Length: 278
Ligand code: NAP
Figure 1 (cartoon, helix red, strand yellow):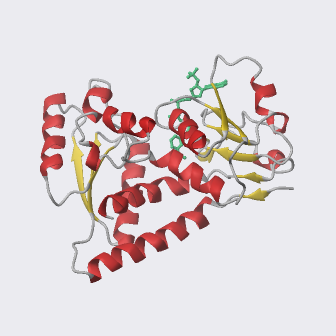
Figure 2 (cartoon, rainbow, N blue to C red; figure 1 turned 60 degrees about the vertical axis):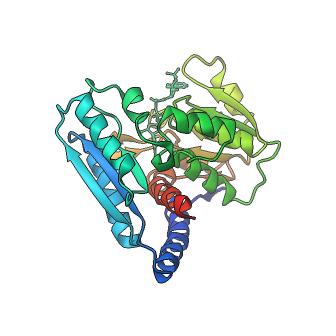
């Protein structure tokens, strides 16, 4: 029987460190850190995420400028707002909540956030710097994944890490971070052949598919670290990709949903904001 990797508990530990850092800055006469979050329209998931950012910021003493925009805002208007925030000296981090409404080009708009304030690592410049190993912000969800794996105290060097999913916000950056830890990395996706066989060879398995209960114990190597990134609402409940109860019988560590990766993501965002201030 494996161990449940508690994202809530780990996030709390990081929050205490963030809080100490902010209090120290204030004690030295610095302004509390300030970030801006932009929400276009009222997508349920995005509203929830922005509210949880705001709640955490107020708990940690971070100032937030929340900008709520109409669903039908034009690309030019939105870019204009981002550019004003780029020039706002008080604002140290900018978060643009995705997905954007269909008429807005995400790649064009995210690339208008200057990389010094791109704490979610969304822009092409941020991505370029991240993959080249230059100074910049590490995307929050993959950053949380690595922290969860580190919390097991198992060295990632030389381990076979398998990631299912190749999105720009989760799969690809998670693969890069595992590579940085000297793991041997395989990225799988919907066209991968023999997915089960590949997963069964994984010392570290990260699932970011978005298909509830897809990963059964048949996909698991005995003693593996299993990270469940997937989040899907099923009958009003949040479900992960992993069949937790059967997988934990075989794996050494498994993250739950909820209370695993998701619990870390917002905390990593604030951590990025504070790193900017160091
Ligand atoms: P995405 O862009 O939809 O990517 C899903 C990936 O899964 C794609 O690469 C896709 O392959 C692959 N896939 C789909 N079906 C598959 C199958 N049957 N076998 C193997 N691979 C398959 O999603 P995302 O943005 O990366 O998010 C993934 C999941 O994580 C979602 O449930 C999302 O809600 C969740 N998420 C959670 C957090 C958090 O903080 N907890 C943060 C971000 C995302 P193709 O590329 O071939 O289509």
